Length: 244
Image 1 (cartoon, rainbow, N blue to C red):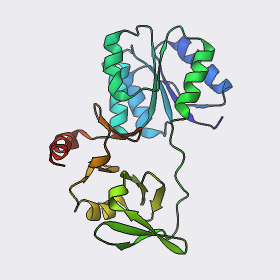
Image 2: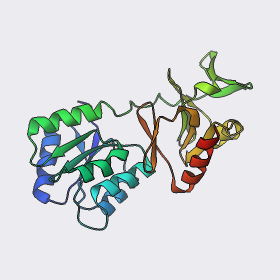
Image 3: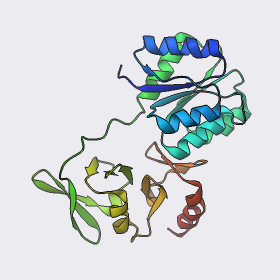
Image 4: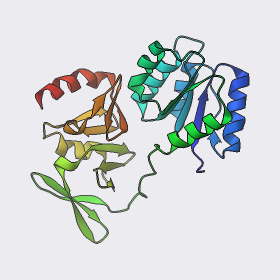
């Protein structure tokens, strides 16, 4: 199994230690566990995380569901909830975060293993290696051309699902492929925001509003991918969705 980075958020030390041992046996990279939502958010902001094992009942002001919502507002991540109280109320509150699984305590080792393997299969594959000279070479009214090696690849603007910032690069995602471009999100934003169907919903994401399939609390979904929505963009997003 690939060395995915997993964060355990669990306020019972014995359970946290047991989870860590199981994950290490599975070949996962386990980050230092957190016992409350506040410390989990701090760890999440500072470290790349592929999967979070989240206890719903946590000590402190934030329970596991609220912590997961705030994580998703920062960046996409896959969540597995752990709970000793899998009632309808918790399930409905957690639904907008699109969890990969709910595991009821005490859980069996085999159930945990299967849930993690299925969840990690949803984690996006690493982006293409950063190119040296990949640029948007031509821009027309309804399309742009991306220079890749010795040719220019056509991308219709209407096919773009979203554009994602990646330091000094950005990734243009379409249903067919992803293209890592040697330009910043701000540079492409100047082009795409001329069109009413595009909107920057987060500091790292610009989306095609016509491709949105569902909207949760602080997150939207495009082709099963979770895109965070900043608090400042939510009102404008609702207004624009009514216009397109």
